[in-house]
Amino acid sequence: MTGTANNRYEPSRLATLIKDEARSLGLSHCAITDTHLEAHETHLLNWLNDGFHGEMHYMERHGTRRSRPDELVEGTLRIISVRLDYFPPDATDAWAVLGDPLSAYVSRYALGRDYHKVLRARLQKLADAIARYAGPFGYRAFVDSAPVLEKALAEKAGLGWIGKHSNLLSADAGSWFFLGELYTDLPLPIDPPQTQKHCGSCTACLQACPTQAIVSPYRVDARRCISYHTIELKGSIPVEFRKAMGNRIYGCDDCQLVCPFNKFSNDTREADFSVRHGLDSATLVELAHWTEAMFKERMAGSPIHRIGHERWIRNIAVALGNAPTTPDVVNALQQRSSDPSALIREHVAWALTQHTLNTAG
Image (cartoon, rainbow, N blue to C red; front, top):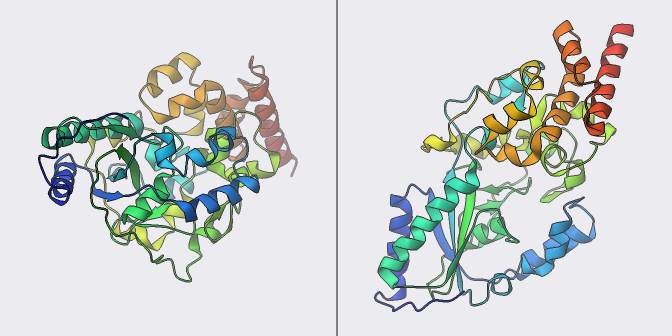
């Protein structure tokens, strides 16, 4: 990080201008914190030592760089933490989709354009605006793209608190939002942290988790999490979790859907987060027939694109195994039974076995 900020504005005035610019760029909230994350580092190391990261080996490789921003980006003094609402108001009701076993449930954050691109572009505009006030300065923008403890930084900046489900929660905005950061070398005043967790005695998220991945308040075992299985896991989904997946083919929102604070959430105003390709109400059979070329074309610019067609079909095969036994469902699976991918064939075979058992029963 290199910069030569010329201090045209004294720090507190500059901080105010930064927040005003963030608001004008459509960001939902913006606050500033320092680089000290000692308490969160202890939580991170305990989580890694327990193996809760599963096959996300990059988290272990990065180690404490994740909790020490000034080691990740030398010269970092402050982090500008921002929030951007994403819940699409035009999406089919989430509970209605989850309640229809022939429909495909896609996590609400992934129904539109890739948030990495949207929020990173917004952060770059914010950085450009800061440079107009402060002159050239050192910075790096991050959107879930590097070893960054984004939720810890957001909590420390006062954007909310980390809830029992491990997502950031805001008393007036729920949890349906993305987080992004600008690491900077500007000596800005910091905002007060969120020191109180308002979850109280509520355990709705723990009770709602289909696989009991929230093993205790504030601790999530990724190895049990449907989001991990459908997005991060590259190999075979453990058989013990397949029935609990239901019709969830990309991510899982159950812990957020039941959270009382999400009655205060705000629908997104970003057109980029509107539903694309009917993913809010598509059927499993329809999606199972997507070829690799169709997947690449339709998922270009979507966060779903990164899991690839093979894992996409793997996830759909499990959901089809949990669907009612109908000719269309069985036919969709049979058409994949000789797929070139051993991973797909294995999950299709499991799914077909479920329907054989249904018929026999």
